[in-house]
Image 1 (spheres, helix red, strand yellow):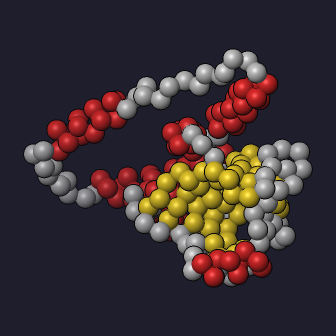
Image 2 (cartoon, one colour; image 1 turned 30 degrees about the horizontal axis):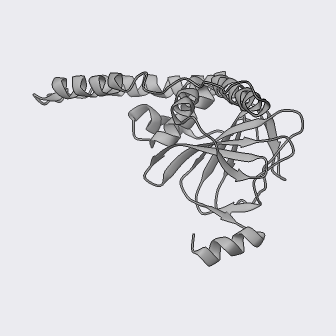
Length: 230
C-alpha cells in the first residue's frame, strides 16, 4: 500500500484551505518525502489559484492590519523563552540523560520541516506502552495529529477505528499484519480496519498519525476501554 492516494477531493480541500489543521499537516509532511504527492498538491493549488482569480475581491476590515501586527508581536515575544539544557556535574545518570536528550533532539531534527517545527515546540514524548511513545502535535475539532515512536520490535495494541486514520511513516518501517509500510508510505485505515502496527527490527520507526475518531482497542485493553467509557 505504497503512498496510498488521499484522493482528489482532499487535495482540492487542501488548496482551498478547507482541510483541518491535522490533515493539512499530513499532506505537507507527505509532500516533503514524496515527489508524487508534491506534484498532486501543487496541481491542486494551481487550479485553486486560477479559480481564485475569477472571484470578486472582498474588502478588508479597517482593523485587519493592526490585528496582523498584534499576532506577529505576540509570536516574537515568545522566542527564546525556553532555557537550554544543562547537564549535571558529570555523573553517570546525568551523562545518560544528556545522551538520551541528544538522541531525541537528533531524531526530531531529521523529521520533515512542518512536523519538526511542531515537535520541537512540544518537546516531550509521552509513555504509550513498552517501547512506544507518543507526542500530540495539534487538534482541530475531532481531528488530531500526533507522532508515534516505536522501538524496533515494539508496537501499539491490536485495535480498530471509530473513524479514519492515516499513518505516514517518517523514519524506519512497520508492518500491521496486513502490509508493510516504509519511510514515505501511508497506511490508511477506517472503521472496517483492525490491525496491530509493529516496528521492524533495526531502526526506530517514527510515524505521523492523523485521526478523525478515537481508536477502538480489542482484547484486554478493549475491555478496559469499554469499562472506563473512553
